[in-house]
Length: 153
Image (cartoon, rainbow, N blue to C red; front, top):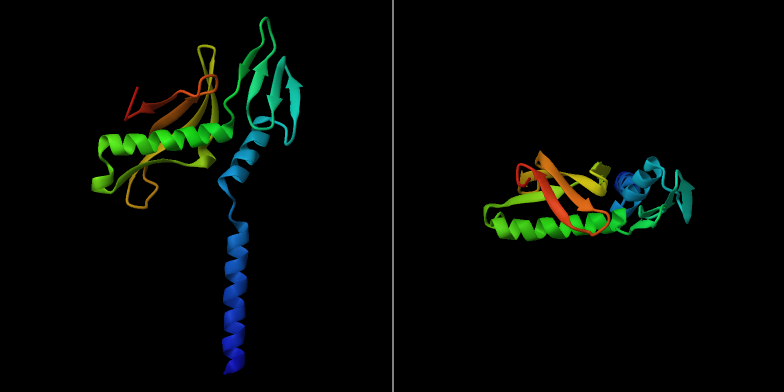
């Protein structure tokens, strides 16, 4: 009987340890996305008159050079803070609704010579992820955050 309990405990411990070690933090996911976008893992690289830094910020070399200082990590934090503010502004808390983004949906976005970080916006109830409702756009130059889609234009 003791052996059965011991091996059951051992199996449960090993399975839970394996599952816990497979989960990735938001920062690790952002780093992987940046690598897939062509950013270096450390330092910087120069590609097509652009200096790309490992955090996702970049400098366009020209006359004059233009720096886009908002990193992917900062953009994720700014977008989450913006959504928390909008949730309270819209009064979603009292109805158990939420606005959220998923770090896996990080994208680069360019429009009219302006560069942005974009995240898909989800609207859900309770602890559910919810349905896709648009995008959260973070300006890479100024850090200005706005919604595009159902909740904003």
